[in-house]
Amino acid sequence: MLFQILACAVLVFFYGIYFGKMLSQKKRGIRTRQIGTRKEKALHTVEVLMSVATLGVVVVQLLSIVLDWSILPGNARFTGFLIGMLGDGIFLIAVLTMKDSWRAGIPEKDKTEFVRAGIYAFSRNPAFLGFDFMYIGVCLLFCNPLTIGFTLFAIITLHLQILQEERYLLATFGETYCSYKKQVFRYLGRKNG
Image 1 (tube, rainbow, N blue to C red):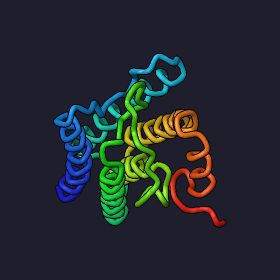
Image 2: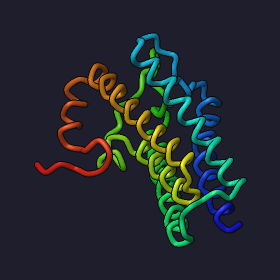
Image 3: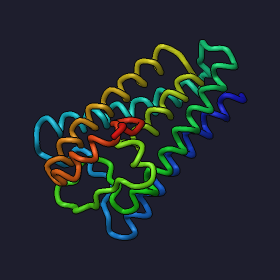
Image 4: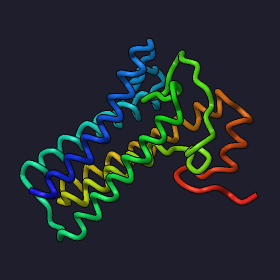
């Protein structure tokens, strides 16, 4: 029962941040969720796959929690809780730092500001990094073949989304983004020089 409570805490905190930010932006007339709205075939395909993966992983996580299905010992499961909460914290800092420039998906018409301060000085994709840590954490809490498979599927599709967003950011912000890419790693860390 303890691990079920811990996993639910990770998920509630994470999705509380996600949907809380969406509601906050909606009140200001900003449409946060723009996944799958673009017509470019490759981008549309990646965003639809990402939607399937991120919805599917939640269903599998919840099913695993309800069935209390895990093959790992307690200490590994508690490590999963810590990793999941780390992901939640990274995600929270990322969406707060982005302010109203945060979107889920690549916007077609919205003009957003380029953010490179705060946590973005150490990761070009801290929100996705937060997602990954949360998924890995819950996978360790309730490790079984289904959560492993869906966690990998979600992480891979998020990476594919990052690659699409990098093309968008380069086209939108040009040399500013190119310079930023030379200074900050995609997931975590700064480059020397």
